[in-house]
Length: 204
Image (cartoon, rainbow, N blue to C red):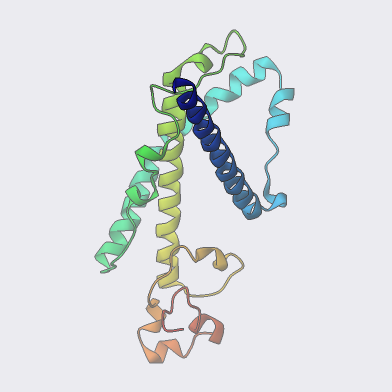
């Protein structure tokens, strides 16, 4: 009886691993299809070729932006305040760009660390080091810059509904109507493609 239970347990565990592998493979393929090969940054192989002394210098450089983040936050919140004072509604907040805490793969308890590393890079063996960088500093930085970009796009979409090469990348900050769409007298001056652009004209 005990043997049968053990066999059943092993089968369930094996089935679970197979299911997770399939999900991981499907997720990986979905992400792969979204990546443009020409956009891929080459850094992994390049980093392996830099000298140890150079790595000691360049790694700490990533923490210098910590001194600029307060100014980025200020600029972002001023942009947000501008939209709010203009009467804008349904504007995303900073927290909308932060990943859910529960979505992080690793917590303090199960955080992985590097076991094979340079003897000087003692920080790579610290859970706190990886938690600070990968669960706080990096996602927080990405979130504030993404939010700031979103807000500035919304501001530009409102005041400047005029085409340029990068305007197709503003679809993540659509608005109902631009400043130029408020009055028929002004709207008629717009180029037809600008007048009927769904990014800043919801009636299209």
